Length: 110
Length: 115
Image 1 (cartoon, chains in turn green, purple):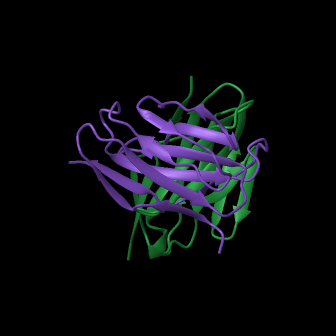
Image 2: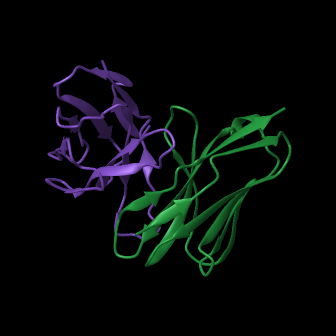
């Protein structure tokens, strides 16, 4: 089976840095995705990791450790518009389907 | 502009009624998906289609039906057999589902509620 764990909620201050963790247990791991979803809206793609290490995209970075079944999304220079849910999703080898975690709701305060 | 359009934004269903959620894409994507989102749960896959006139059940297909008669369209019917239909329904598409790094493009969702 598969299990993906993320914290339910996090809070942070504008201008700060926040790290959202995701741990997973799956056989045949074939990539991990992060999506951002504002309330009542469509999730949008943020990042993809399949090899160990850090992928940086502007203010957002994503890290993966396959041996530990662990990923994190790092958000720098937080802005109010970053208040959203962040979804971690894992793909298994040999399947087109993604398995999503429950999402982490981030609230950014002034 | 290319994208995925879901309609309606809000939908109400009476007991024993079937309702159909629309999903249209003009991205020329081969694959389309339906997910259900409930509070405190991750997105769960209902049905997906990799090519016209073909579709597969996801993890929670019971009480739902789909069709894929055109590449652009993948409507979802919530039947009376679905006893707990209240949820936020998301449609998605991808260019080539065979690519391991293929990302999903999502529509803006339909909130279905039971009267």
